[in-house]
Image (cartoon, rainbow, N blue to C red; front, side, top):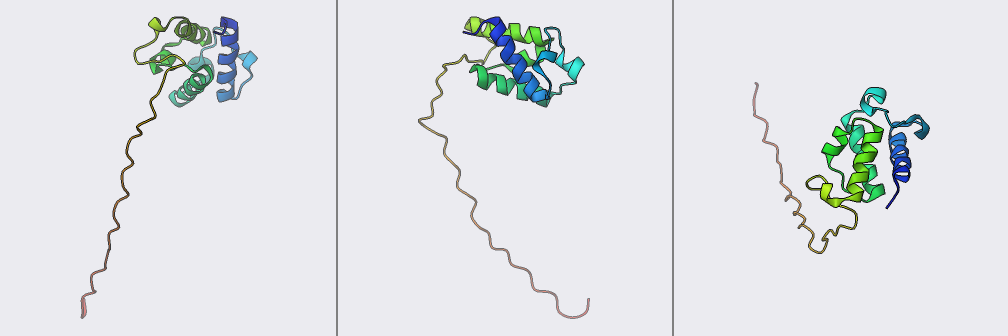
Length: 124
């Protein structure tokens, strides 16, 4: 389990990678929306990278509700410390995903022959 400071380093590294900034520019009270103009796509990319790095399922509502970088770190820390506080639908690392019965792949559509109608005879 990472310490809060280790988690802060990870969060800052991920955010700075997505935004193309230096991690040292990101402070506890840095607001991604107000200070960097982060849009929803960038926020989802940050969330996806944090999920992969931390092996933690992050609820999108957590991403949106974080007021600043420090608040986001605190929310992630709480999720890592206590699975009972996890948002509905979130899964902590170590979750098992059953891949034994993959969904069937639909068959490609059958080819359809297309023929052109003959041109009308005579003047138009």
